[in-house]
Image 1: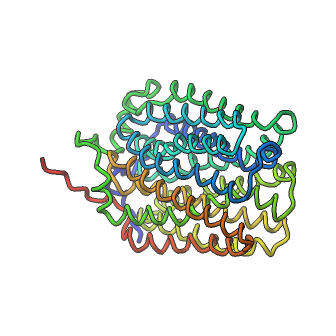
Image 2: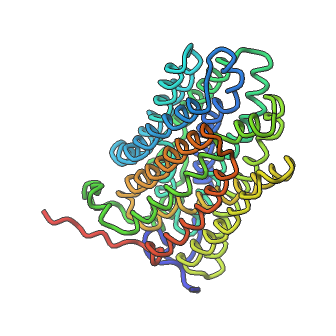
Image 3: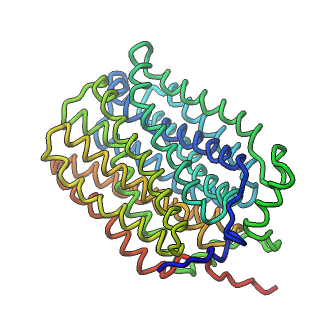
Length: 438
């Protein structure tokens, strides 16, 4: 389980020495900011829903359609976005993605009916679906294997930043302006980030602020240059059990995650009789815990590698620990509201620790020319899990089952996913991809 030697394989360190470039951590922060904007955008509807309902009537079933509509196009673009990133490259691809989703978010503010809101959610999903494939590809371009989970933890912490900022800031906007301004402000923030990205992101071999010694050092420890073989088709990737294991595991765990994220404000409105101000006061706390989970999950795995554990052991120990805390959410409906917030926080912590590690696995397992495509397929599976479970939740609540059975289902999904990964990813190491003969 442990190895004192430096990890071998894709992205490993040739002599066990860390890369001494500070620029790469600036890249991680830049991508993390984009993910924060993405998660702010996603929270706009949930936190502002009570204000929106004053002018556009929306039932629980319609709300589930809004969240599922977003996730359907998000899932399609997550898979397609991975291909897009492999074709266009990270710099151009992420720029296009951000501009699209920022304009789509701003368009929500023009809605005067449920159908217009639904159209906005569909367009938002198209844009945001490319965000995490771009993040994974940036990590593969800039970070060696021993630092990838830490870098992905920083990037994934953007989910928490967006989630923490969204409830109080949206509540503040609603206290001084009508609800459309929530979406106009969010869209403007995304467009500002696009200018930042255009100025600061380049591949290591092209980055203007890297010294030649830093550039050589990064290139020595990163993956070898691509052979020129075309991007690997999805049909070939689907022939690997590791891909199926990650896709199905993500389907299960993101089903729970999107329920927590989209329905937490609604649960507080409906079951705990919160108003918008109270949601703004409390709903950021679980997202703060999620940010800690991002950093500790990825950091713990990197720490295990530095302590001499194999890459396989480091990833799986951290994944198992993350999954182990998730069943505590079953207690949320029978707990006082303060304890319920604590339980949500534990679930958010465990989920984002888990998510950080799962998102870095494509870079651990597959060559760089396939990382975007694999990450896209995995994200597609996760978003579809959110679609399916979101529709199930809408129907369960419509027929009066209450939130208890919903939380009972959600609390078991990470444990099932961990067992699936143990069975399909026998060892976390580079997968041998056969070169296609012409």
